[in-house]
Length: 323
Image (tube, rainbow, N blue to C red; front, side):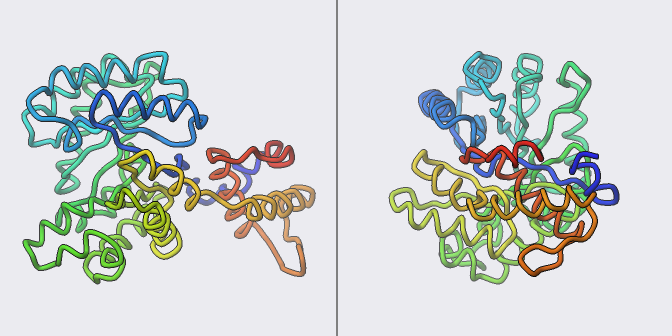
């Protein structure tokens, strides 16, 4: 059997997405981002923003532009998503009506901001599915921003919904919703990793995602000039908080995020060696470099290879054979 079958017979097989989600809200930045995606080989996602990252007052033309870009031949890797207005905004259904019928088949995902609870999300999913599905009948994957008190309380129920494939933490909206009880320093590092209420929110989101095999996407780093700060934020999000994806709001942030979240070359080589030996032993227990391995650790190393598959490395032939 294929590793993805034998290793997950009694386990949820996790969703694997590119590790960087880059946001662009103006036509100029959208087109530049798409050109960079093509240059780097499709190793990061782009979310075309109709909400906070876009200018106000031009909602119809902007939504039409997003739909045209997603449907265009420039969408080489079909890894363009779109963030629509929140469900209470007058332009929410307008966004859906203008975007989904035009490009449902090539849209990678739809991002929903400012969700307050599971019932509100389920109502939004009904409207999304009313306006567009893929031609093969599959539903459009949805990414949910967790940035309100209500959404955090129900984060487990939200992560459990089958159409949801990713939860993103909305740091600044979350801090602002405390009306000064959390200091502004918690919107950036190191405060965002140290303040107990913020750290609690991050960990609850990550735990919910991993329980249901979904992707936990970390908030953006507000530092633009110093890429070392961005890289450190990304490393801490991955190693301390269990996130497997992170936002970017500037092209200079993309590479540090990809480097921090992608498996290292040594991790990939270890995974190939262990999984090749496991395959030769019909996936029974094995020893490698004096350590015992079985299907529990095989699942870990298989996930390393799957994450590497969408990363910046050219995988060795043995890895490609396993995949």
